[in-house]
Image (cartoon, rainbow, N blue to C red):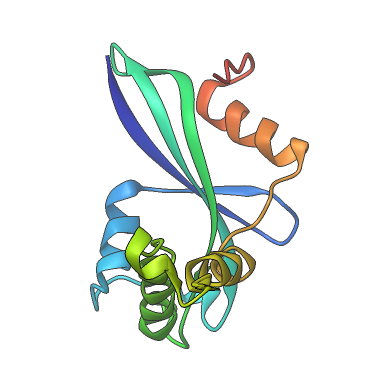
Length: 145
């Protein structure tokens, strides 16, 4: 057994578009040769799915991350938004117990960063989207675990 990754972009009508993992990784790395011009200047929902594999076939969904990708005017992942997301992710780390409370004041900066990150960079799927993703991975008889 092992794990695999699947990436799906969601269009405005909630239809799925499978994005090959290698292309997704090139986009995330900022490869200048890789772009999705149809998404230029847009914010697109995507699902990153971790799948349990057996004999090179998916047998269960382990986890799904529902996030947004921000594209620049050339259809590449916007590096400014990528940096903002990374900064918020770092700021979500809770302070050490020593830093957590200074003079009776509780440091809640990480909580605010988490809320901001969730509002700006994540989304919640409908049951129909969850089922569509499972169907795309498993076919007619999804086994979501």
